[in-house]
Length: 475
Ligand SMILES: Cc1cc2nc3c(=O)[nH]c(=O)nc-3n(C[C@H](O)[C@H](O)[C@H](O)COP(=O)(O)OP(=O)(O)OC[C@H]3O[C@@H](n4cnc5c(N)ncnc54)[C@H](O)[C@@H]3O)c2cc1C
Image (cartoon, rainbow, N blue to C red):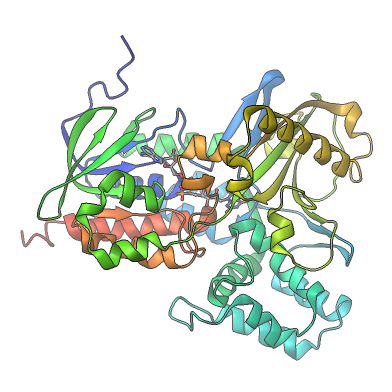
């Protein structure tokens, strides 16, 4: 008999949360704390979504998306999770850039970027200050037509070196490009510039374990290996339940943390939405996907400090096509030292590159295997510039591609950072179409990444509460 992952689950709950990414878990936690019965369904065998890790022989643990996030995570985790989680968030020590135009190390704060822009790039102090102030004052209600390219052209005309410094890390953090709305850049960049880049000490496995414990303390019914196939909607457009692993479970609201497009088109079904809404949903562009190469050194063998994050590139200027190309010339290296998991004796490196799903989806199995091997080979050659005795120390190397991300998260085209800006309006409008149907997760660039996903989970949990609370029902 196959194992029943829904054993002893109730026949109905107040809320079903589909997916255990950071947004899904945060929503589930807030709603359970507020007293609702919550069922959290995750198709994968571990919680976390993209905030995940995997283990390999010899006790190596690789983090997938633990590279860096803004300091705002501390406040969000303290308020919506636990003090213990918030207290493990620590600053990165150094962010490095190595490319044909410049070589520098920074704390990635406004103060340090101001110094660099003035002293090393020769920009007038008033221009730098005006740029930071402009970025800082941007918000969701600003002009959405102005692009990031236009913003840079206004302040730093013809300066592709400055554009690269300001844009490259943000592109790696959320997949945005110069053609995306300037406000998405301003919001995310300013979040980082407040206090620099932070990480979670102890690794993603510890973070997700602590989150799971808190969810259990608050009474969330957690189920892994549970794939939601359908969101059940009544003819008068109200959520009534879900079908998961072939079983129907009733609920008053669904909070989907799955990809926005699969929530609408695969799980809910087109027949429940207005034509205009469907048109807007169809037009949503997904963000890019990623490739990664994971490298572990032999136990106890390591390298000197060479930065926490290193933006390496071999070409001039900021070029999104080159960044997405399978012919890789740009890589972000995350260096993990034993302090990442205090008490360990491991040095690891994860190399990340933005990637296009289409470049990987159509490869035959043989080509796919060869391309992954080539990805590992070229990454090792590149990394040797920074760790000269790398080959003597290497214990384990493997690669992931957009196909890997699609497989584990079920995101369309393995999208690493959700959707482009237009996805946010569609995500927010979902409950206006179907009462009780909500979505939270990486969308619209500004709600992407660890901080964006957690904060969007909070916002949407409050919307669910408004719908379900006895006050709203006139009780
Ligand atoms: C390579 C890489 C590096 C990154 N680096 C960083 C970084 O350094 N800093 C940063 O802030 N962000 C980073 N990110 C982005 C960040 O990890 C994500 O934006 C964030 O974790 C997404 O959270 P989410 O809540 O949107 O859900 P996701 O993590 O996307 O999770 C969605 C969950 O829903 C589940 N699911 C989907 N469909 C179903 C279904 N039908 N039934 C049941 N479950 C389902 C999936 O299995 C998954 O667990 C990175 C992402 C990638 C891919």
